Length: 129
Image (cartoon, rainbow, N blue to C red; front, top):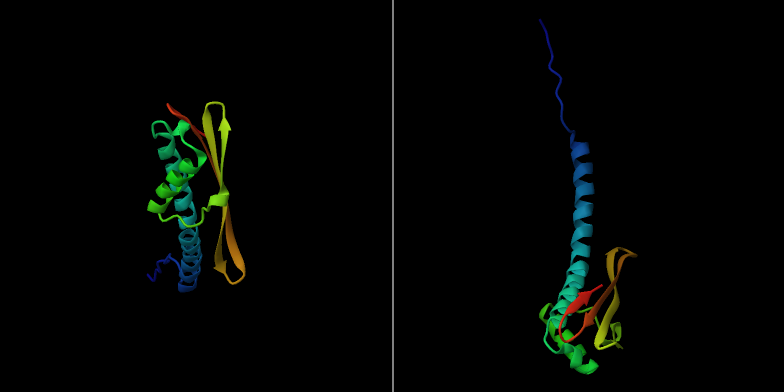
C-alpha cells in the first residue's frame, strides 16, 4: 500500500508575508508608543497637581510652573506653554492642555496625534475630565 500523508503548514512565502505584516504593526506601535506615553505623563501631572493641597489658591503662573516641573521629570518634550490654558471656574482653576504630536512614519507619511486633557484644580478635591 502506498499511502501518502498530506502535510500541512505554511510555505516560506506565506511566512514572509505574515512576518512582514506583523513587522509593520510592530513598527507602527514603536512609533506611536512615545506619543501615548507622553499623554499619560500629562494626565498624571495634572492629577498630581490637583492632589496638591491648596492648589486652588495658587496663581496661574505658579500652577503652570509646577505642572511643567512634573512634566520635565517624564521627559515630555511636545507640550509647550502655549498649549496650556488656565482659567478660573468658581473657586477653582480649570487647567486645559491641548497639543498635537506629528511623528514621521515612512517617506512623506506622518502619524498625527491630537491630545486634550482637562483638570479642575481646587484646594480640597479634584475632578478630571
